[in-house]
Image 1: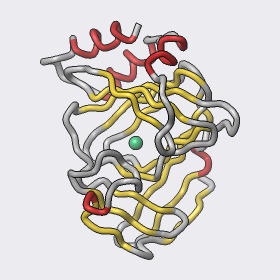
Image 2: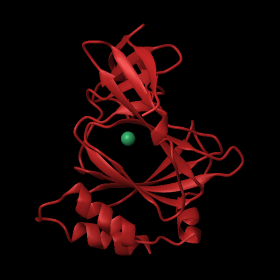
Image 3: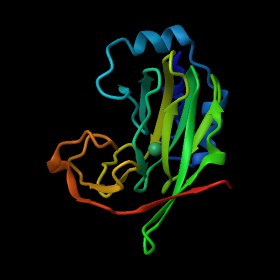
Image 4: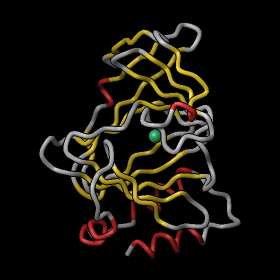
Length: 199
Ligand SMILES: [Fe+2]
């Protein structure tokens, strides 16, 4: 039951909260697929669909990924998170941005598929993209972010095709390019050069 997890997370109130400890909780926790499916009934809006779950201490949600869907490449701005794969297979692609040099390095070696029960960590300043590996099956993931109240102010988005960088402001509703124009501080055209690393 998802409620068991929420209870465990809310019990951490007043304690020191670390990414490693929350990852351990998520590793042990199993959400039954039928329950996750019931909680994520509804059509996809764009790309993927987020289903928020109420929790006092953390920002918790289930995400349903249509076949082949992916997140945009984004950089976290002071929040970290743990992703638990519930159904299907997802992969994470990791990037590094050298700001003075305006170079975005893409690490292909980190493009490893994760299956049901696997846990991925999202570090505070991670730059990454999450992808549903399958082009025919949907995926469901469970996400726990901390702190509970965060906004997307100064989250960076990278557009790999058009080489644009988007800097979101606090009006953004997600770390994606689908935000309204007023949810961006600015968009930098030709903002970076993409380099592929094998390491
Ligand atoms: Fe992320």
